[in-house]
Amino acid sequence: MEADARALGPWRDRIDAIDRAISTLLNERMRCAHAIGEIKRLLDVPVYAPRREEDVLRNASSVAGPLPEAVVRRLFERIIDETRTLEREASQASGAAPSHAAPDTRG
Image 1: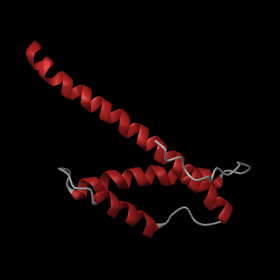
Image 2: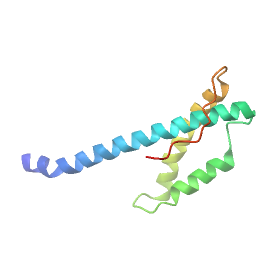
Image 3: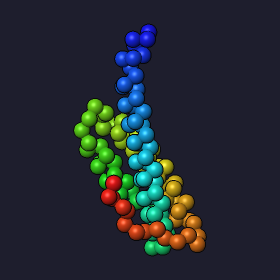
């Protein structure tokens, strides 16, 4: 049993690191969505953009890997749903200063 734990340990550590990276990227995505929601409020455009959502799903599904496309789409549908909720909240906020500066991509 101890040998099993030692063999699994490095893989579990790697998965934990990947999970933290995913969470970091999701939070960054949500910050972008919040800014987009503010901009949409200022421009008086709807939060829901079906063509853009389909583009996002197509883009995410285009990454080759062991996950079937349908699984990737389901995961991103959930991410989009949560993002839309945040965007909607930001677009309905009043009095908030817009944060529509270009994102910092320096890493």
